[in-house]
Image 1 (spheres, one colour):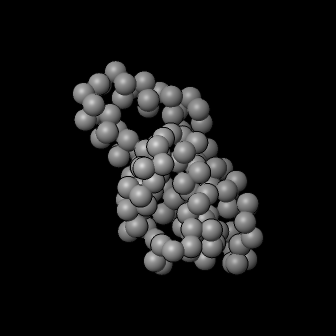
Image 2: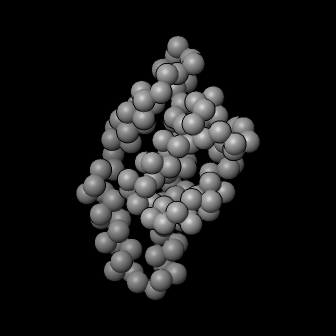
Image 3: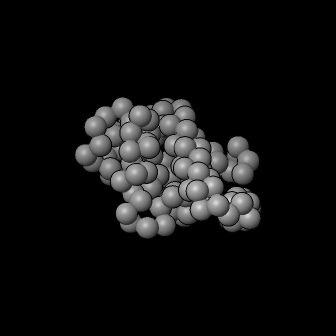
Length: 116
């Protein structure tokens, strides 16, 4: 993945809902949109039981309590988006390491890069 690709994905998701700030630097994406992105990249959310774990991993990034995942005012900005994306990559890598299958890890990382 290249920086521009990651930024373009953020801009795509941030354009799906009306922003309450006029400045593009303050754009946010909803938590629901971010979860959709993680599912699209198959980062730790292949099973519905993994969503609570993902939300716990993202909780430090969220400025508000997590009770309305569709409210843009409770969303995350670009820095939080990058950090959350990297955290979920790390969690996915750790799970693959736990399965004791290094070839599966490299195949998964290659798959993530190819899908972007």
